[in-house]
Length: 241
Image (cartoon, rainbow, N blue to C red):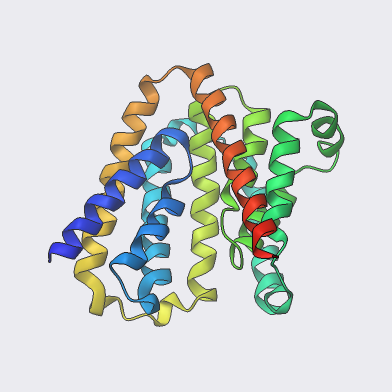
C-alpha cells in the first residue's frame, strides 16, 4: 500500500508538470517506475497511467482543443500503427531518437529549415510519425508539440491539442503491447492510485497553466524541447561508442 500511495503521488506530480508545459511528465514517470515495480508490468501500467494523464489534461482544456486537426492526425496515426506493428518493428531504430532530436532543433530555431519543412509538414505525417514511431522509440510526443507551437499562438490551444494527439498515440500502444491481455485486476490497487493521481495532477497543472503568461510559457516550451532534443542526440552518440 505504501508503494502504491507513493507512486500515486509521483504520478500526480509528473502529470501536473505535463499539465503546465505539455510534456515531460511521462518520461519522468517511466524513469522512476523501475525503482518500485518489476519490469514486466512497467509498460502496461505506464501506458494506462499516461492515457489517463493526457486524456484528462485534454478534457480539462476541452474548450481550447483545435478539433479541425484531429481527422488528419487520426488517419496518419492508424497508418503509422499498422505499418510499425507489422513492418518497422523489425527494423533497427537505434538512430531514430537522434533524428527526432535534430528535427526538433531545426524546426524550432532554423527559420530557413522551418520554411522548407512546412511544405511537407501536415498532420497526416505527424500522426504517422508520432504514433508509429512512438511504439518503438520514446519521446515522440514533442513532434506534434513543435508543429503546434509554430502554428498556434495560444499556449492553451497548443497544450490541449497536443494532449488530444498524445492520448491517441497512447491508445495505439494498448493492442500493440498487449495491454489488453494484461490482467488489470492483479494491479487494480496500483492503477487506481496512479490514475487518480494523474487526473488530479492534470487538474492542478491545467489550473496553473491557465494563470501563466502566454508568451513566457511558449518560450519555456521551446527551450525545454531544445534540451530534450539535445539529450536525445547525445544519448545516441554516446551509445554508439
